[in-house]
Image (cartoon, rainbow, N blue to C red):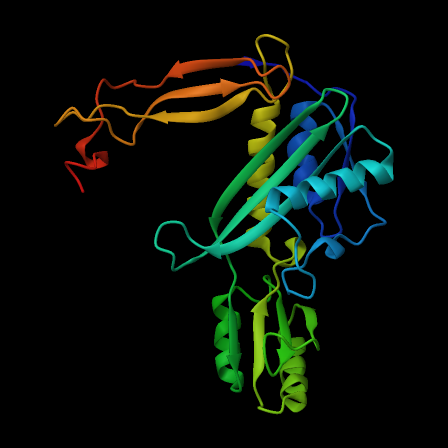
Length: 284
């Protein structure tokens, strides 16, 4: 891996966001790349999708990040831009805990490359439908309120009468009472506000995704010197130390350049054989 100290010295990079992501992305990327992250406004990114479901996201998470980055480049007139996009769902291990995946897409038309940083981890997300203030209060405490803000609606999760950005206990009680008065069934739907500025746990993962992106951009191709030379594939098949059969453990990495497509294979078998714990035969 060839490293370049400041691969983007003196470049201006557009960042379109209306949810405060520049607060963690710019301080992470600017010192390591030598660039200036220019915060772009003037476009409502909620038009591309909202976590509160009033606007569905078109396409994949990565496609949404690309669209934001392109819009930022268009509005700023710059030839490089970045944008982040988050997704929430069950964890990939048990399927029971809330999980957050954050992507940051970096587009550079001058160099003709796209590089994507990623981070993932447990999320502070969830919802509750209840008519009891004490249950709502307990839910809020579990979700880290008021640092993690909440959204309330009367009646159900699909009610369009929505109150976002609830950030203190007095507001929460006020909107609980107001929503309950509006609700024919006396139920109030409460959910975590997943916008970045309203969810510190998510903002931390966005910062981690920016750190991952920084590492990738600091890794330059040994052939053409383009940033983004990184692992494209991990090859399984390291032999089991007990039975000798191939396992899911990585035996090699394939590194690839996003511009010239140069590739190299790096054997990762620092130990000769895999632990039997990772063998489908020995540990089914």
